[in-house]
Picture (cartoon, rainbow, N blue to C red):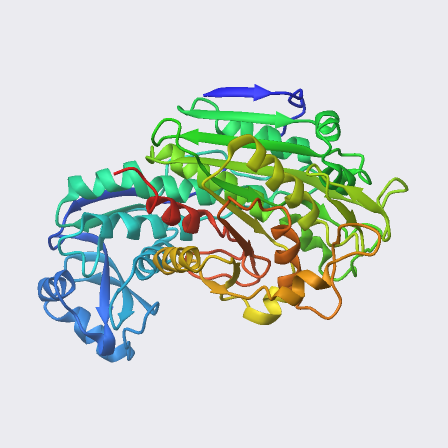
Length: 512
């Protein structure tokens, strides 16, 4: 790995806490376990098939009898734990409903197994339903188990690393093929998601722009075909990035810009660029936010975290694609030196911006980050990803991120990747009137527009910095980056949304 660091790495770079315990992962041939602990799928209305049926026979019908007695219907995600059943010391029954029909279903199954066996001190043989010919099915279920077991823990109180107490052995028709799929692919995706979750979860008194940049440098250390570039505040100012510099000038913690380039594809081919909003904490600046739930603004750099996590995944699985993650990082604070509503900033492109609200700062850092990316890398596709607006949650809830693009073919490509990865997207419009709404009387554009949908205004603003020759997509993930309750695969708190989506999208561009 080459590292071009144009700012000194902080001597006080603080490492994130060690990950909470995740299960060991292994693979074995798909056949009925003779004894020990097992996890078995159960279909709709308690149906037992394949290895589950064979295990029940070995238990002389005791599993089916327990299902009947407990009224276990096999609904998706439903679990029932039995002990001392026939030759098995412990049996975890996991409902699969109508069956596992997608990678998301397999991930959820694996995650449910991990949660149901947490605390067990044994090797658990895990039957994977419908994994008849595809070795990848068992690897994807294992990926779900790893993702579902994630726990950031308490800052400063992480337990020392130790061997996992439980090992999940996933049963596959070809165990060696499943193990290769895990080691060369599926595990890398989980590691990228973990990195993103760790960054988002870290408290913002630790997570300064410089700290964030240092973590990225450290994480990519030693990975082949990777180059890391870091710019400090003096260089950001010298390059004319008035939007990025202006956003961070109210903080004693100055901005940074980090680029992580991975070259795994054809030499000389233009990369895909992921430009992620990296506001390490957002008070709203002079346009200060209400105090309720402001603590959650530690996650306002989730777009940058996802971009870095996606490139980490691609580098670790040695994907045959060229990509770059660009992370414009700043802290938005209401200092006496902070920008004010009514100020005019000059961006790197020379375009001027009237500030309507200092709380519409994410689009400012993305404007300079996107322009610098196009100047530096001339990408074949540029994607901005940001926790940009509360409005997108009002429109789509917590089921979908907002997708904005003027390219119908690109929209379909992203929607297909969303379906395959399980990270939902819904396309939203940017009407010509929205561009009119952000015209300014005293500058080229303003960072807010009256009478236009908020999420579309944010997208339209960023589109002002897209060069004509650059295919472009904007993703607003404000309602997806943080879960209040969580689910089997994604924990309460930081989700790492975008890593799996970008990995799936990149597969469609890989050199065959």
